Image 1 (spheres, helix red, strand yellow):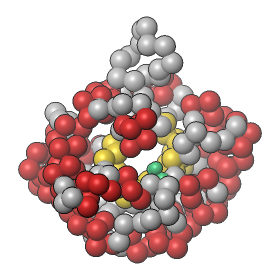
Image 2 (cartoon, helix red, strand yellow):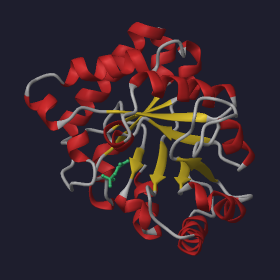
Image 3 (tube, protein in one colour):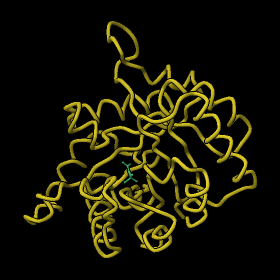
Length: 249
Ligand code: PGA
């Protein structure tokens, strides 16, 4: 049985004071045990403050990016070991905003995911097609390519890896994929992983959906058989809406 995982991607939002308030709200509302694994991913500048707030709670801490090297002359970068030292258990890699705005490639994403696994952290590896790619019938091929390159060589450790399917056209647009589109893509992702790593691994890997998930549509999306929770952007910036999404999972 795969445990659903709901992660909040706060992106470039929140001062330390705002992040602390939001994290306290999430922690307070999820004080009792929840059925899903819950992660919040504040900006780097708030990790320390949020780590203190989450200490001893069921809510886990994640980062939004990482560098694949352990240390050295990489100005502005943060290593997986530093994230672990900052009490992170998870990190998002390959978000479409980083792929398009920062030129991150599948091979970068692969190195980042491997560095996280080596440091004992869970990578949340994002993939997804653009609207052009969907409309020209390339969705399956695009996803297959992203999976094969981004998850190359991870093999058995895919069991400790989370894949986030985020159609680029659904991120921050209010335009959610239909449950048929979501289930179709997730089944294709799982089949691609099966071809790479075998059916046992594919059955265990958790695949989140992301892209305009809200309290009003979460339950329907999470009910798809191959969907194992969600990666939540805008709706994770309010404790109440994020908690309602967690409850839907
Ligand atoms: P959204 O963002 O929920 O605001 O669409 C999702 C994401 O970018 O992870």
